[in-house]
Amino acid sequence: MGLENETRGLFLDLYELTMANSYFLRDMNDEATFAYFVRAPVPNRRFLIFAGLDPFLDALAQFRFSNSDLAYLESLKLFDKAFLDYLADFEFTGDIWAMEEGEVCFPGEPLVIVSAPRIQAQLIETIVLNILNYETLVASKAARILIAAGEEAIVVDFSPRRDHGMEAAVHAARASYLTGFHGTSNTLAGKLYGIPVVGTMAHSYVLSFPDELSAFRAFAEDHPNPVLLIDTYDVAEGARNAAIVARELRGKGRKLPAVRLDSGDLAALSQEVRRILDEEGCPEVEIFVSGDLDEQRILEFKRRGGVARGYGVGTRLGVSWDLPALGGVYKLVEDEKGPRMKRSPGKLTIPGKCQVWREGFTDTVALDEEFGKGRPLLRRVVRRGERVLPRLDLAQRREEVRERVYSLPPELSDLTPCRDPRYPVRLSATLEAMLKGAK
Image 1 (tube, rainbow, N blue to C red):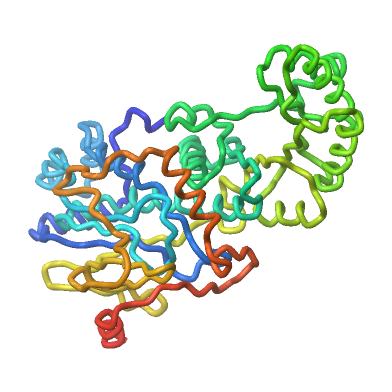
Image 2 (image 1 turned 180 degrees about the vertical axis):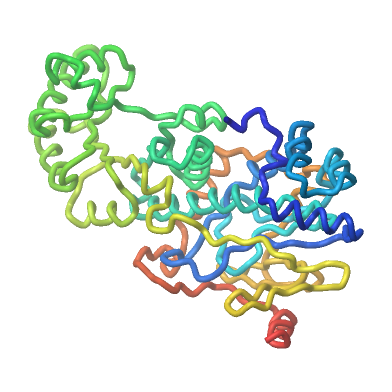
């Protein structure tokens, strides 16, 4: 069953409801502050790109409990009737501060702060983590792929067929476009977010015709901007057939934009295809490559002299192949008793409502009442339950984020594998003293 017509109230973990039921019965609904952050270190990630805020705020606006939701919860026989009555009128009335989508950020610092009545803040934990963890994961992977491909390359999301569900595929398209990708093959994401949609052809199309040249001619006749897939049979012959079509189109005042390689030794084959196209008088026809690509494979392709104008990146983007999950957490940091801190070994949390101050690419986490150097990264996006953040202009923000990705200093843009990256994040003297006192 799809989620498109459902309220979001039941999109939570059961323990959030059982805790909230207990809070309600014990009149523990004072204001509480939770922080969303990513635990450090994150292997092979010297930086992250924060993403997913707009979708999260949209989901928060739908966070209600329908009659059928309440009937289901009642059937579990776990909850007090008065608590279910409370849920019937549930709406979020708190405040939220967050970094701007597309901001370069680091593990170990708060990315979102939620202050609300304790029950409200607790119940939204899962939608915070589900949406922000995944979009930030994909956006961060996309940034690495863009760095590897280079600023002049065209990079497109080809991931929906291998992503973990339909909603994940839409989020992947959005997050990668926000970061600087040029488009997506996902037409639903194109409709929802105005992302340019890109498509070529499949091997099945070529196999559906008597021969490859017939398939190429038909597709070129029926498509205004044909890109021909040339590896169904023999790649060299495919390149020559593409050159025939390119010359025929030229005679009609049209152009063959590119050919695509999707299998085999992409670096070696791309060199051969470039040579053939040039010899056949078609230097204007570009080469587009795809097939289990990510930043490391693109770097290897280029190291071996591969020739490509663009890259279609699918599976390894959508599932973030080398890092399939992001360790983002949502923790209580303050309530009416003051700052709160988890003290578990290896999972110490920063206490208190905080702000992040940035100077260059060095961040300082400080208590909200402290004044830091540089610019504050957390801004209020929801006030007393009402969204105050304008809806993101995705195309405009993409240009800004893309420029920022390509302007990262070498110590951050380094794609060399690293199990334990060090991040330019420090704590204010006050927070340092609080943590030392807790150990």
